[in-house]
Amino acid sequence: MNVQNITNTIILYFKIKKLDTKPYFNYKFYSKEIRTITKINDKDTIRLIFNELLKKKALTKIKVLKSTFYYFDPYQNRLNHEPKNKKNNLTVYFD
Image 1 (tube, rainbow, N blue to C red):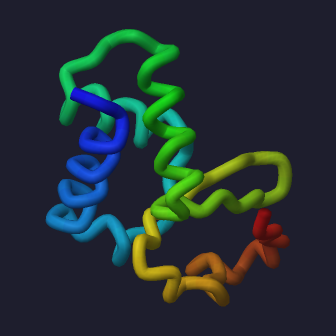
Image 2: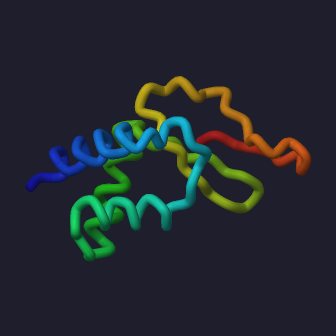
């Protein structure tokens, strides 16, 4: 199976799980999900698939303080997304 078909399958799976309505997650969460969906255990291949999702703009990278998170946004309708926890006055940077 080529990378294109795998990324399309993963995007479809994330849409079914409605990850676009959930908050952002770190790389570890998405790598576990990709490993579960594809049954691939090679870290380099998982990273390759993850980078393809970033290139397709299905995942968007954001920085919260020193941490990097990603959220699933295949429709690009979350451009002005802010964290739900406004108590801490966190600064969010979009890349």
